[in-house]
Amino acid sequence: MQATALTHLNIWDGQKHLDADCIVLMDGHIAHVGAAADAPAGATVIACQGATALPGLTDAHVHMELDPNHRQAPKETDLGQRPHMEERAKAMVCAGITTARDLGGGAWLELALRDRINAGETPGPRLLCAGQPITSPRGHCHFWGGEAEDAAAARTVIDRQVAHGVDLIKVMATGGTMTAGTTPMDAQFDLETLRAIVGAAAEHDLPVAAHCHGTAGIDFAAQAGVRTIEHCSWVGPQGWASDYNEEVALRILERGVWVSPTVNRGWQRMLDAKDPTRLHRLRHAYGRLWDLGVPFVASTDAGIPGVFHHHLPEALNVFAKIAALTPSQTLQTATSGAARALGLEQITGRLAEGFAADVLLVDGDPTVALDALTRPVGVWARGVPVVMP
Ligand SMILES: [Zn+2]
Image (cartoon, rainbow, N blue to C red):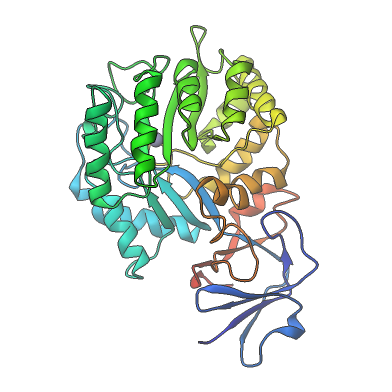
């Protein structure tokens, strides 16, 4: 198999800068990280002066099925989305997103897309897919078909997802904004039911991602032992981010749960707002979680109105400013940290020998200024060149 040697690089390996300037890709994997002089003879050499190499990015919350141009929530799955889903997947890898977790669709179209990408039939990120989210009757995103009134019904929904080959289970632990008649603040399931859902998923070795806006739902999800809490919006009677609760935060920490804050680039409006109340509340909540040691995984909820699938690079810059994280901390939430959150830490998220050749080259140093992420000059997804320097 032909090796490719990328030389003259600045390398950030997912955690730190390396004293190395060359990465060798072979057979879909990283064969060598070190000095250009040690690259194997016969390798195709690509000099990448001025570029920084980092692991391909992960967006831990997307919906491949949803068209961000639609202003309304769908009433059902639009099967006509299939070709557009492939276009979205291609735009994502071209932007350097080499892994994404799909947290909900109605007809398993995203699983078919995942399989086509894995087979090399169409370019795209490595996808982990949840299929139909479990929700309460007429609850958040019920139009996707995952309604369950109790633990037994939830088990039936899980069995159906397993039969379709999902990689994880998604549960709507609270209401949401996208579905009329549900309220973000309110829990949709009690603790006992959430525990039963996590237990039933675990029987199939599947982790659970829980959609949680209100504090009660966040608390139940943490106690039930989900893998990730999506949104984690701390919605209370005073509105978004108004109900941060330190005891709940400590339970999130104790249970080793990851927080996936779904910050999209449109949240820039909070940084620009005349009234900084919501920004201050968010910064307080994120700041406390971070100081306690709760791990974050980068996510955007791409597919919802106005949130495009390939905009994670811009979103990370907004996330950093809202949560007051350094560029390196932010990058970890989308690379090495994301891989741990998704159970892929042996596979991706690092530039090291043996890992998948998920490599992003950007113009400039994103650990100095994250806007370098918006200037991708090279992308390899599992060794397949998508953007060539
Ligand atoms: Zn979502």
